[in-house]
Image 1 (cartoon, rainbow, N blue to C red):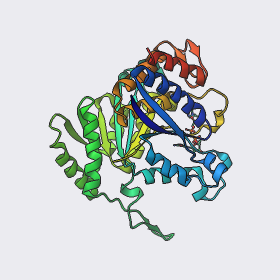
Image 2 (tube, helix red, strand yellow):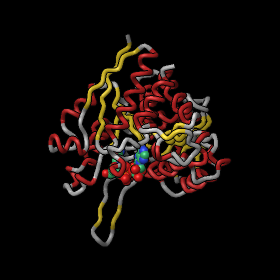
Image 3 (cartoon, rainbow, N blue to C red):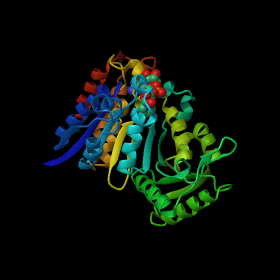
Image 4 (cartoon, rainbow, N blue to C red):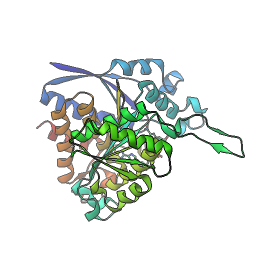
Amino acid sequence: MRSYKIALIKGDGIGPEIVEEAVKVLDAVSFAEGFELKYEELLLGGAAVDATGDPAPKETLEGVKQADAVLFGAIGGQKWDNLPREKRPESGLLKLRKEMEVFANLRPVTVYDELVNASTLKPEVIRGVDLMVVRELIGGIYFGEPKGNDGQKAFNTMVYTKPEIERIAKVAFEIAMKRSKRVCSVDKANVLDVSQLWRDTVEEVAKAYPEVTLTHMYVDNAAMQLVRDPKQFDVILTGNIFGDILSDEASMLSGSIGLLPSASVGEKYGLYEPIHGSAPDIAGQGIANPIATIASAAMMLRFALKEDAAAERIERAIKQALSEGYRTQDLSAFDAKEVCSTSEIGSIIANYASK
Ligand code: NAD
């Protein structure tokens, strides 16, 4: 029997509640598809600070490398906000990402038909949106040297090497091959030298993917096009800072932060997590929406374990639950037939996914 080891990092706030529901669904689909998942729980963030004094304990940084994939909830909360920066939960997550060398951040944005009214954009603009932002995560201006601030002058350096661009471009083209075979590379090549290298390199990588149609777009235009006509996009490939902004913009197309999954992947490891935080304001009340985490588990099955059929079961089950009107409280204003708790919607999705 195929067997995989999954590291579970529940984290803080709603983290434990939503990860529990994703495990429920994973158990249902692994049983249905005939493979086995073995879980190991690891500590990160505030929970790790409380238990060990360190937001990213050594056992966690080593433990994730023993696993086939990592499923992560969320970290953070007021309780730890006054600690020195290196002791805060957020530092733990940055350390984990760096340790795992996850250079590609993947954010799919799917607008569910049943929830077109949840978006701030007009239904006709967003109905049918299905795109993926592929963002370079560990290079570019956020990490470039030199950088400095002497109180009178401050600067950062936007730098990309050809190998860094090649590896992220390959990820985007591989993903496009499994989708509708279109990549739009976003840059600022009319102004920035680094973007010219980006564009030239992406063109070179594209030669290995003749079936994929490559287009280029300036980032200012892309920001505008994303709200004007988001359906024109399939895979958006971009660097760290542009991707940071565009992926947040794109995520709001769907209308709810509780729906959107993400993956951060590298050559060896992958971290799968909802895009939202630990939502301390609703933690412990059983009202958090677990769908983003459940959809992240589907991404994990597809990208890390190559269990595509199991991933499809989950994605189908989420759609079915929404189309039958089951909603958590955050979406209760949008055509809800029944408002469910975190655990109830998890069970409904697990049940549909097992069929
Ligand atoms: P947040 O995403 O946690 O919450 C923003 C709002 O969205 C809140 O009103 C919350 O109740 C709601 N929300 C979020 N997820 C939801 C869900 N699944 N279902 C229903 N409603 C949901 O962002 P924030 O309030 O700015 O941050 C709270 C904490 O989370 C902070 O400590 C922050 O540092 C941390 N954070 C962690 C991550 C991460 O772990 N990757 C990401 C962002 C923020």
